[in-house]
Image (cartoon, rainbow, N blue to C red; front, side, top):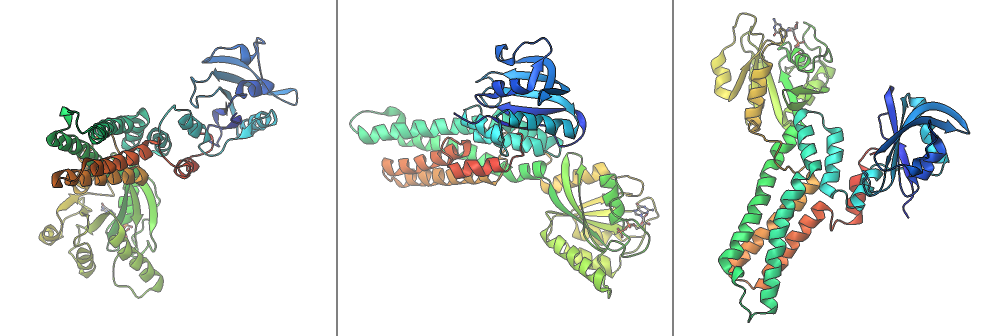
Length: 454
Ligand code: GDP
């Protein structure tokens, strides 16, 4: 019998309501020791999906109004009996209600334990459980859509189709090996190759979309670089809508890397506003400049900012040089001023050039378009099944490799039972992805990254 667990399901902040979730065989009995409905109806007599208004109690004394919502197993999030107590969302009241529930016999839930129980009770597979975690941490529209699709089973369904093909194929091959005298017409060599090619191409599509998906859902590590006073901090402020970077007209103000996550349309940029790149004798500034150069090397996207109201100088040329071969957009700033910049030099080195006035907040849409084109995500479709993390990617890429080896084997005419070993290995990887064959260690690792209360 699984212990009855309890945790605060809502955030640790002052809010309209706070929810304490209780799950397990004695969830209703436990909740009843803490909650009394106004009309005296015991929670144990309620049908599932029923709410009751009443009070919560500690040591026989009521301390808040509450609504108790009862779910009966298996029709609940965890698949167990669940009671959710909604109280007023003050931090003290929520904590006090949880304390009362724990005193009544529940134990504190571990991170992700509700979702782990849902997985163990067959309410969702591992990819869907990961969808829950992704949805909670989603920072933008595309991330939220992709995680919701994961939670709805888009990836599970795709993987099930491939598994059906592989397992069907494996069964036929096993039959063929065991009963070679029987005619098994479906399994001629062409048919076998066609099934394997089909499975391989489904997995290949998932792998191909992984990088784009990661850009859209996890965001892009982005460096804003440029000579002092080009307008880097003003651009960062334009994108973030705050005054996070200090903007002054004195050169060399931004001496270190300032980090901030902002949304550019539906892409999240993890921005680093760096020290202006120039020759400097100031030790502190030089460290900042070194960090800026390192950032150019490591960032997935570089916004190289130039001041259009001035001619290009040695610092600009140094920047152009260090951006060579990097994923870079040239951002020509201060277009509200008269232009003095030699654009032919910029055009010779950058494929993507965008004109903005950071001070006047002009040019965001053009910048978004250029960034999407550069990263190759203009046609990104979050409604397609997506691999959400490295674990999922590794399982699919291993399965893909096994299938490719099986195809090669079939072409080379190796025995069916040898091919079958590879197909079974591919299927095992996919079963590990959905959790049907995942090790306890993998499962524990996934849920340990959840928040408490989910
Ligand atoms: P950074 O050193 O590259 O970070 O440059 P800042 O963002 O601190 O900007 C330097 C100066 O240029 C400040 O006085 C800004 O107000 C000004 N500035 C930045 N962007 C623009 C712009 O688009 N137009 C104009 N006219 N001035 C700008």
